[in-house]
Length: 218
Image 1: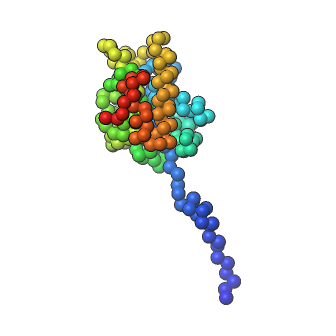
Image 2 (image 1 turned 180 degrees about the vertical axis):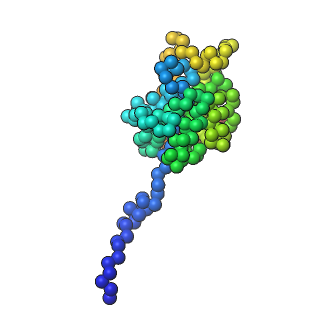
C-alpha cells in the first residue's frame, strides 16, 4: 500500500459555495459632476444613488475609471453604485468602464435617470428600448452596443412649455423641492424592489403616471 497522502476534498457545502461566484448588480445614476448641477432635474440619478448609499451605509467615493463608485450589499445583493463623472452626454464611457473592470455585462446593469418624456413625478421601469431623445441614454446604448438594460426613468416634465436644455440644467424651483424628495425616495424604493423581487414585480408596484397615480406596465 502506498504511503502517499492525497489532498482531502472540500466538504460538500464548501465545494458548492466555491463553485458559485456571486455577480454584482451595477446600479448607475446619470448626472453631471459638480455643485453647479447638484440640484437640477438632470441630476436626479445622482440623488437616487446618494439616497441608496445613505440607507445602506455605503460610500460613493472610490475613483474608478471615469466614475465614482461605492460597493456593498442592498437587499442581500452585492451592488456597485456608480456616478459617472464624464458629464451626461458621455455617461456610457464611465459606466461601461466599470462594468468591464468587474467582469459584468448589460445584464447586471440598472440605470436611473431623469426623463422629460414622462410627466412630473411619474416613474417607469423598462427592460429595453430606445434613448427617447435622452443623450445620456444614447451614450449608454452606443457604449454597450445594446438597448437591452434595465432603466428606471423618473419623470420631470412640468406640464407646460419649456426650453428643454435650460430646464434640465436649472435648479428646481423652491415649491418643487418636497416633491423632489418624495421622487428620490420612491425611486430608491423601486430600485430596492428590483433587487429583491425582480424588475417585473417592481413595474407593477412602482410604475405610475404621476404621484398618486399608479399604473401597470403597458
